[in-house]
Image (cartoon, rainbow, N blue to C red; front, side):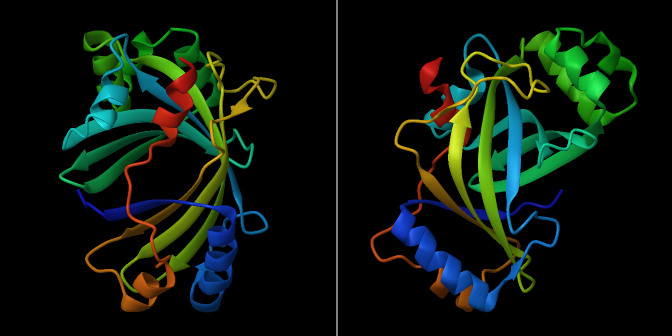
Length: 223
């Protein structure tokens, strides 16, 4: 399992405009993005005691969270993902779900996952059974991604972050979402063994410091 380093910074619109010009000069845009952007919808899981949320807010050094995600309103390819953090390093495991499987999970029908022979689906089933994990909230946002091959660096700026409130009907395009408080913009920098100096210099923004911002936590302010 490969772990990656990650920095997060909460920035403002002026910062984003500055970074956009810098990054376009040294990095490539993601070829899979539409007009340089992704529209991302995620459905996060948590339990009645808000285990994932509390571990994030408390800064627990070893933690995990499950989510379902698709890009650019295309539900023909949906991923189930497990993100893990260990002492500040992150890793992600992923597998594919069909629309029918996703709707079954949202509707509370998840026993079928126990017999899929898919380790990640079976792990989610086990934790839905033992930890009472359930779909908790939808998180929508726009992502502007850049790639730098040396160091396998990925720099993203996420904005227009919206919460689905109590709606968890992940596949319903009419599910109402509202902007999170403060309408934050989040810069994320991820890399493998080393961060090249050119990228380190590009993302410097004076008094901006790394933070532990969580889009999921921000979207849980409403419940």
